[in-house]
Amino acid sequence: DVKVTQSSRYLVKRTGEKVFLECVQDMDHENMFWYRQDPGLGLRLIYFSYDVKMKEKGDIPEGYSVSREKKERFSLILESASTNQTSMYLCASSLKGGGFPNYGYTFGSGTRLTVV
Amino acid sequence: GQNIDQPTEMTATEGAIVQINCTYQTSGFNGLFWYQQHAGEAPTFLSYNVLDGLEEKGRFSSFLSRSKGYSYLLLKELQMKDSASYLCAVQGNNRKLIWGLGTSLAVNP
Image 1 (cartoon, rainbow over the protein chains, first blue to last red):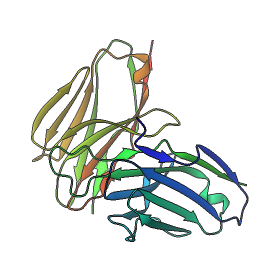
Image 2: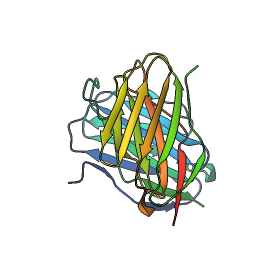
Image 3: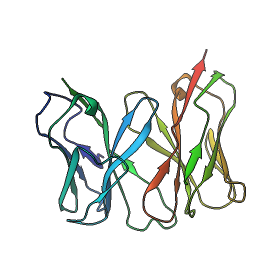
């Protein structure tokens, strides 16, 4: 019954490495989001996408990029990993326009990334 | 600006009732969500309110007053497994949710 799948639960990478975090959803959702979550800072939006090949910057896009070549897949890329990117990364998806009833986001299980 | 406020931490006793408040100021309103997040896990959907009033779902209820920009989550008959963070989120005029920082609830025996 898995709906949003993130490729790795735990990941350890070295400073300077290029890191790919993959997210796949099987609910035919148009909207997909990447967040990072840090203690005391809550959920912070990195990038989001409302359609295939479309992407928009969120609140903290620096150091990250994204790719959405297919509707079901949204990838987050850390171009050159740094220690301050150590965090929990959460992918989420939602229906296009919301509407009623609207069940908001469905989250993946998260990837805890450690950069050493 | 857009803002969601909720208490940082709360403590309650097993079997008791606890109310977690959330106030918001957003550009537009298309619904308010409550999510539960256990430590180290992803948030999971609890409730959704778009009209004023109380929505009840088992031990959990959520209330909304749009005119006051206010919501609360009510948890009854608290259990140890209810120890978690509770996130309030509002959908404004676009498809992004605006998130509060969460309320960490500790349920003690």
